[in-house]
Image (tube, rainbow, N blue to C red; front, side, top):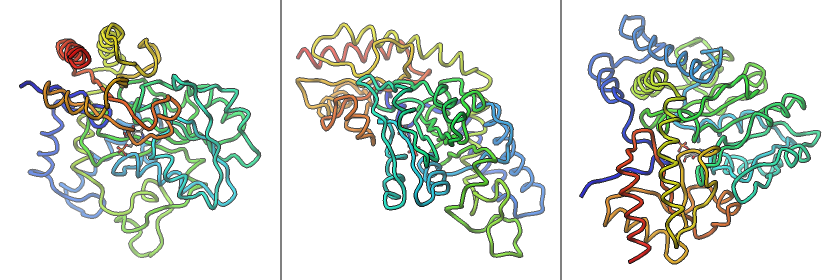
Length: 382
Ligand SMILES: Cc1ncc(COP(=O)(O)O)c(C=O)c1O
């Protein structure tokens, strides 16, 4: 049986060409730590790490490589940003489409802070007026996902960025579902911080992620994790300068080597070309899905304001069993359930049943889309 991977929303596969080789090259031929040794191989690894910070800047139009911080994933990034910034009495605004990477850290602070969840409509869209009217004198930050990991709807965050700027509120974005798919411009979006994860559409390995953050926000933040940085070793106090302030302990250097290669691939290929290729596939998939009775597409029927994440409800079946059948009988890998985003499912009317989520990448082929459509057709008509 052939296997078809349509779970890129969870993690991308395949990775960008060369990622495996660069990780292997580091492990076999470099292997050193950075910031801790005065020998050439250590400097070599250090240069790759710095170059990776620069590549992140290039991809997201950001201008301070030292304010690119590496973590293990965006979940860690959002924890560091949220818990580092928010103080007793602060108020925060989020959308109802957030992933638990945002909601769980916020809820862990619920004795100290307050948040308002702005309700999106059943397509996952946000009304700017609802955000505006949620602002309070103590609103410290607006934290939002750029696109839903459940239905693929892209939120129009440029207006939210302007609102934040006007009201002197920090704007923090979860780029998990758009980095590597949309042309993200940190400056144009008026962001103060943006978390990213390396293993989804950035096409790098698992275990590497990070965030980029403005100086203005750094100055208001406490650290969440302290420890050795290889710098200021005469003191037991965490350095206050970047990136050391937020990079305690040895980094995932093999992961950074892999991410370095995937970022170069994305920059060479061009985000607009990737998007164009994926939009073509999304359109074909949408056309086919809309012609199948007995399923319900969740979210937008057009590819204009969506990513390659498509959720489907099989009203006459258990979605978990459908996902199992897709895998067992047809070799198609999807993800069913609530996708770590209960609030998004409540918004879309798919809680608690959940959906079957198909998520494409630009490596997906038209043949795979056609085969998936035929398989879905078989399932609902047998
Ligand atoms: C929108 C969104 N935010 C955050 C995450 C968490 O990503 P990670 O597991 O890489 O930390 C995900 C993962 O599915 C996501 O889709």
